[in-house]
Length: 113
Image 1 (tube, one colour):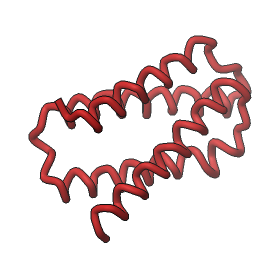
Image 2 (image 1 turned 120 degrees about the horizontal axis):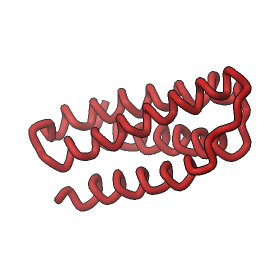
Image 3 (image 1 turned 180 degrees about the horizontal axis):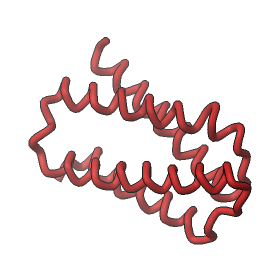
């Protein structure tokens, strides 16, 4: 798979994942999370790891920092999914955290400081 296809797959999957997380935080739909958001997260991980390997970026500090934020978002996704399954409302402060995490990830991925 070429680099550009990996990149397109990663961006598309990440957009669906984050959109699903925001939807879960603002208007919870348990079935959507299980059928769309979680698979999109897994695809974003797979495409992202493919990109990191293709680019030889693993020892770089910006990627390590990005992975820390990505793992925090994944943990937050797990919390949201668990609350959805139990029929509990999402915490009110979650949506701004998701947006802030995505902003940090985008900055790190584009600028590569």
